[in-house]
Every structure is written in C-alpha cells, then in structure tokens.
Length: 120
Image 1 (cartoon, one colour):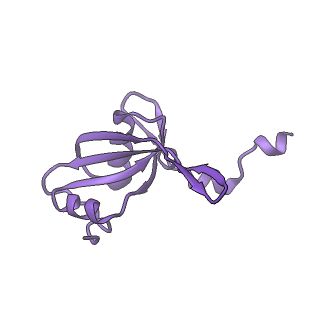
Image 2: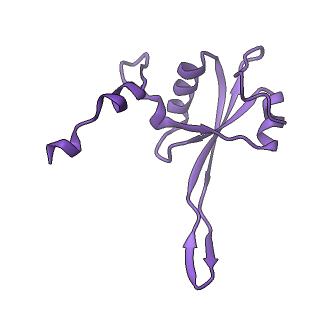
C-alpha cells in the first residue's frame, strides 16, 4: 500500500513550489490549471486582463500569488467566477458537464503574459 502513496520523482519535479511572504508554500500546478483561451479572453487580453481555469478550492490571494510567481508579473486585481455544470442528455443516458472555477486577473499597466495575447 505504501507504493501507492509515494510520489514518483517525475511528479515531485513537475510541481513547482513557491514560498510566499508569509512562509506558506503554494503548488502552482494545483492552483492554476490552464489559461482559458477563447475569443472573449483574447479581447480581454488587449485590456490587460487574462483568464485562467483554477482549482475549485482556491481563493483570490492564492491565485494572485500563483500568477505572480509563474509569469513574473504584477497582479492588481483578481475576479473569480464559479460555474456549475449542466445536466445533459446523451440519448437515454443522463450526464452532467463539469463544474469549474475561473479567475480573471488584471495586470499592472505595461505587464504582459506572452503567448496568451496571440488569440483574438
């Protein structure tokens, strides 16, 4: 049973740990899941706002610290939106789409996240 609870070396190297000012550590891959890339997110990137899918148990402060550590930018404001999944019918089978949480991060004027501004 101990084999299942141990982390492999790959997993421990993949998780980048960031130490905050208060001494607590944040695991960036567990907070920021992925950037949300859509037409609306591309237009918001022109206004210096970026959209990320985040873990459902994170708060605004953790998102701010994770974005600042991962992308080396200064975050001014974080807005969080929680979307609940919808029920869907697949023929006779009923199913549901996943719940998710997204964060809209406003950066300081002049800061950019390269690679996320290309979508419009």
